[in-house]
Length: 239
Image (cartoon, rainbow, N blue to C red):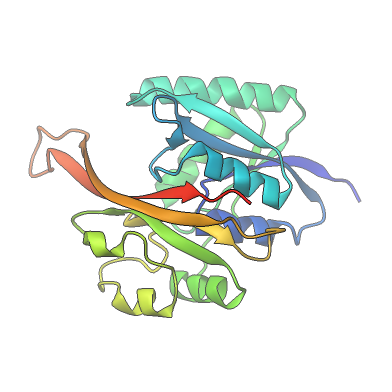
């Protein structure tokens, strides 16, 4: 059987973990790299706010090399796209033909990814596409995965959700307008144990902080001028 060289777009969260588990069932796809974008100034995973050493611990436990895209503090879309095109060209030159994502139902995001990759002849794969998000997160829990909420939208979830384990109790407490997988960006997670890991990532929780970011086109209509997020810091406990 012919095998295709692929990289996993690794966010450090639950959906990426489920997508990796799912794509490994396809024997023609060989995941040889975890690719993650990092805020260069803070050395943390973009949007999730997870420290780089935790990301490195995940990659070591999973047994797949980690590749980093360094982003500036607040890159504009033009700069981001330029960096991504340069990185995709390097991946293509290194023999990668496929890229795996944990996206579930955001059509515009899928189209953007496919267009960006298509310019370099790389095919996008979405193992979780159109899955029922409630059933998907319930399966995540049933399979023995463990994840903690590391960030959430302040206008959707209060700060008490930051640091909570993704379990049945968490799902029952989510407001009706919040997707069970946080697919609309309502919350992000850090996955620290489960069937893709050789050993659990030992973590301890730190402080909760609030950060706000300018909203795009905030000067038009009723669009808010900024978006606020709660972040729960996590620290790696060495073995």
